[in-house]
Amino acid sequence: MLSDIFFASSNKNKFEEAKDIASEFGLKLKFLKYTLQEIQADTLEEIATHKAMQAFSICSRPVIVEDAGLFIKSLNGFPGPYSSFVFDTIGNKGILRLVPMKRDAIFRSVIAYCEKHGNVHLFSAGVNGVISKKEQGKRWGFDPIFIPSGENKTYSQLAEKNKISHRYLALKNFSNWYLSKKKSSDP
Image 1 (cartoon, helix red, strand yellow):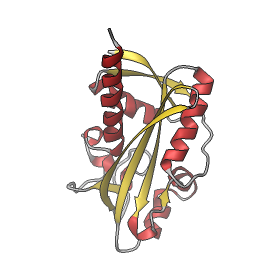
Image 2 (cartoon, rainbow, N blue to C red):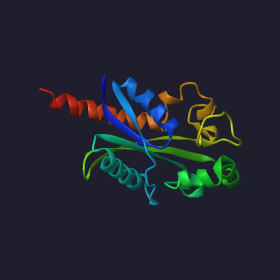
Image 3 (cartoon, rainbow, N blue to C red):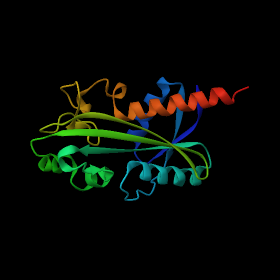
Image 4 (cartoon, one colour):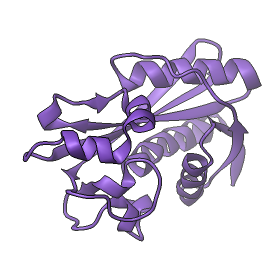
C-alpha cells in the first residue's frame, strides 16, 4: 500500500472518511492536522487550490486537501463554495428553513493534490440528490439533510455512504490518476 500522501485538514471526521475510502484504492493517507485558511471564493476549485498550496508550503510533501459544497438548485447554488461558513453560522436547521418546496441539490467534492510548489491537480465529482425536510441521522456536516438520488435515506443514515458519496467519487478519480502516474514512473 502506498503511504506517502498527506491529507491536510483540521476536520478529523473528514480525514477518517478519506482514509477509509483511499485504502480501498491501495493508498494510505497520513493526517496533517492543520487549520488551513479558508478563502472566500466563487468556486470549490479556487478554495481547494489555495488550501493545497498552503498545505504543501507547510509540509513540503505530496499532499491532498478536499473541499466540498452543497449546491441547492432553488437557492441558485447556495451555499456552494460558502458551505463551510454557512454550516458554521446557520447549520442544518438554517438551511432547512431556507429551502423552498423544490429541494434538488448537488453535493460536490474537489480534491486538490500538490507535490511541488505551484503545481496543483484537481479532481472533482458530484452527487445529485435532494434536501430532506428534517435532519435525519447523527453524522457530521450536511450529511443529516442530504438524500442522494436513488436513495430514501440521508447520507447520515446510509451504512454504505462511503461507497457512493461525492467524496468517494472525487477520491476515486484522484486515486486512479495517482496510481496510474506512479505505475508509469516506476521502472
